[in-house]
Length: 111
Figure 1 (cartoon, rainbow, N blue to C red):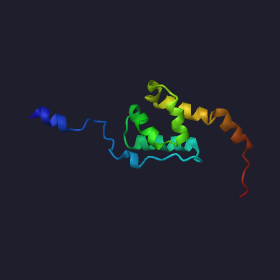
Figure 2: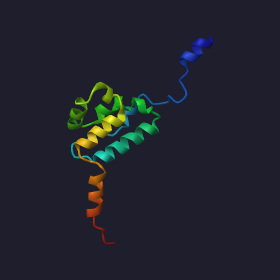
Figure 3: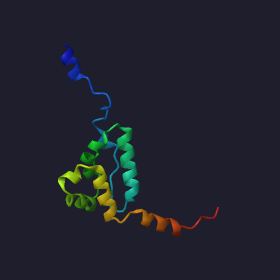
Figure 4: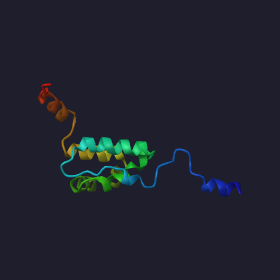
């Protein structure tokens, strides 16, 4: 009886909802890539999904162009969320220099 009750009991920390993919953002061609990743990461954290599992959900949420980037990575790289994210950000040239340049060219709105 004790073994059977342990098998049916969910593990602590594994409370991710099976329908988590319904709350994840989808990347469209003209979306801000950094906003997409921020929203994706927040949704995964709020739904208690282990970071090791994030790469399994990522490809279904990415645009076709971003999925082509992941296709160029090795299987080991595809299993690491940070490697996937960095490859996509690098492709779209969204490093610190890009955002520093954007920040410096912004003008303050009157009001």
